[in-house]
Image 1 (cartoon, rainbow, N blue to C red):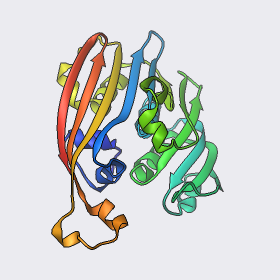
Image 2 (tube, one colour):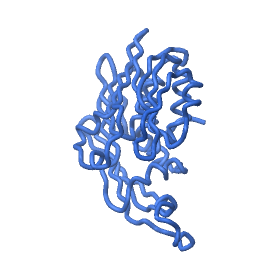
Image 3 (cartoon, rainbow, N blue to C red):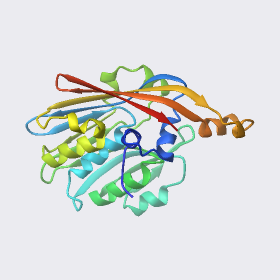
Amino acid sequence: MGYKHFLTKLVTGKTDDFVKKRMLRYGKGTFDGPAIHVVERRSAITLEGSFLYEDLIGFLALKSLPPDANVDVSGNVFSPEDIRSYLKGLGLSVKTGRKSGVLLKYNVSGKIPVSELLRLYEGLSTRCYLLLSFTYTDEAKVTLKCRKTLPSWKEEVETTIEKKIKFCSAKVPVSSEVKDLIISEVIPDFAEEIEGDAKELMLRNTIIVERIIIPEELKGLPSSELRVKAIREGKILRSLRVDDKILEKEIKFSL
């Protein structure tokens, strides 16, 4: 098992139940989807992302660290099921907060190895929202900062892109390994078009659901089940600004 962001899976043709689950939030229409901004400066690479990129940014920050390093982590995990035992098994202190809609909120904190925190991302990112922050200062400084509350749907679709990408951020050391990982995990579909000296990337995903198909055998089911089992057809328009150059891709989907 390994971590992959749902949009990375979608654009590389590896859709699964996780991808379908994340796409359930979009009805018929055109939506400003998740966005991510990456800037390389002399001392660090800064990543900023909107909601639904927080797990990828956290994963990238962790992968820039030695697996046996310890980090002070805190924040909230939102889950549709009881995961208290799982979180405690990773060595985290856990407090259960009130529900947020149908999700349980778990406030977590503790100092744990990077390898254990990576296990959390790999194990929970497909069914939970990981709004976590951590700091590592033993060698090169690495930080992850994420908002602790989930955005409303109105906030997701109406907020400007400049504000949306402040939802989560990280700073990681500059290295060829980190830069290669960013390309392979964030923009694998643009990999052949990215030059090695690129200093800034801004990726926007416009999600267009053109049709919602309800198979004949599903008609008559409750609306809550139809929403989950219906087939969404459409496309994602991916616009990538690389320094001063604009690259675009169109990815069709049916899931």
